[in-house]
Image 1 (cartoon, rainbow, N blue to C red):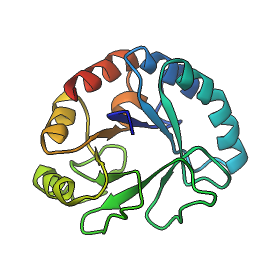
Image 2: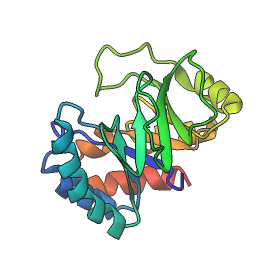
Image 3: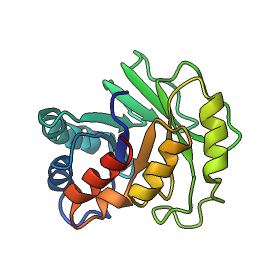
Image 4: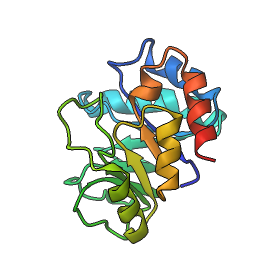
Length: 189
């Protein structure tokens, strides 16, 4: 994957409509958006994806759909979700401490590195040493997820060997998403 920054959508956390938040965030530089919001019916997520795709495409971003119920170009899968057929061009998966990483993936997220505000009580945090060990052994690029609240943690994840970082609240809840994305991207150069 060409992006170091994955932004996970959060309709409930956004201070404005999601397409507007994403458009503002993209002013800080391109990223891949994982359209999660699995509380929506598949048809609603499809409609939202169609609204977001041109916004992302115009800015050099990418759209990845979480646990899709139909054909997509890029998919991010929870651990129990099977790889869709036909296989999307890009497939990533959520991986947690101690779980094997499928070498047939294009990337994975590894979590939770730090305690996360987006999922209170989720953990325990596994820390940078576990991330470094995972990255060294992984057959695919690893993205740090969980508690990446700003540039310092994104930089630390890269220094531990991660291909990049996945964030939710740092961008989705940001009053200034452009600044948030710019800071995260600069920290991971």
